Image (cartoon, rainbow, N blue to C red):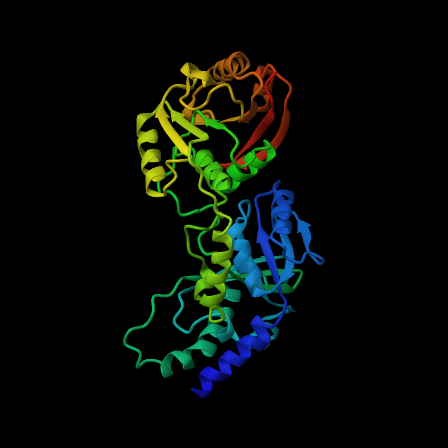
Amino acid sequence: MNNSNNIEKRLKRHVLGKTRSFFISTLPGIEQLCFAELSRLGVPLTEAGISNGGIAFNGRVHDCYLANLKLRTANRILMRLATFTASNFRQLEKKLSDFPWELYLHRDAPCELNVTSRHSRLIHTDAIAQRFKKSLENRLKPAAIAAETNHNPPVRISQQIFVRAENDLFTVSIDSTGELLHKRGLKIQGGRAPVRETIAAAILCLAGYQPGELLIDPMCGSGTFSLEAAMITNHIPAGWYREFAFMDWPVFKPSRWKHIRREAEKTIMPISEPVIFASDINPENTRNLKQVVFENHLSDTINVVSSDFFDLQPQNIEGMGKQQGLIVLNPPYGRRLGSKDSSENMFDQIGKKLKKDFTGWKVALLVPDKRLLKKIPFKIATHDFFHGGLKITLVTGRIR
């Protein structure tokens, strides 16, 4: 009992009661969008900084909970545990000899080490990992031995420790997220070339999508754009349907987490009629998407049909009327499409179709090759992304 009380006091003093340093990892190119999201959460940003691939900020542990729940364009969120210098293994072992792992990990938590080294005298990542594993075992094993009488141990969430050595400076972090944040928990299956939900959220933002706005997703595939837009329209937090690694930290307070979710739930506003229209030429895609929409109670928001984009007339879509909104397209490309001539022909047809039937609409169009931009017959803005290892260009604008 005394040991338990002692741990609680240390957790309050060293983890809960302190401002901590966090790092939000994002895809390159969308850091500013993520920073804007973070600023809207009410997290203090006086010492926040944007770098290539992420955002550093200071806050309390519950700010980390909130960021995981609500950020749509983040990949993962790390909590910094320590920074120190070590230029040889003796120094590293000394730094780790009394590191308080028990404040961040349960004794029986599965743990994975991710080690990188750059411009440091300690360059052997396996040898660095061995020192960290020994430190973890030495610190947590006594607690495990003392608790061997527990015959019904809880199922633990796997934890990841990130160790980065650069110019002999070590930065040690713990992942608060678990599975990357693009895993919304809505769907299991992906299409043949799925856009990650984090990219979809960024694309919708750059295209000027607003909650409740009409959206047509006529090459929907697995439905990423439609599902993301539905969550935005219903004000459902990005992480509403999933769990996070921080939920199995020793410092985790379920009561605080429940309070954060209750406050977020107050903003959820289901709508009564569909404003998102998803279609695909592949009936299997639309069949799977309909199931996901039904299971997640989004049928009032998304209408799913099987249709070829080139046969689609917006005025003929039930409930559409003469209103205009955003059309978002992720056409087949690369191996899915075939030759260069096929790609050029496809985008030539897309441009003509948009110009003919969607004049006045906003557009978000993914283009795999900038040479295809000449096929677009209206004024556009461009944004570059990496998707599936390929550099692609997002085209946005209003069709005139």
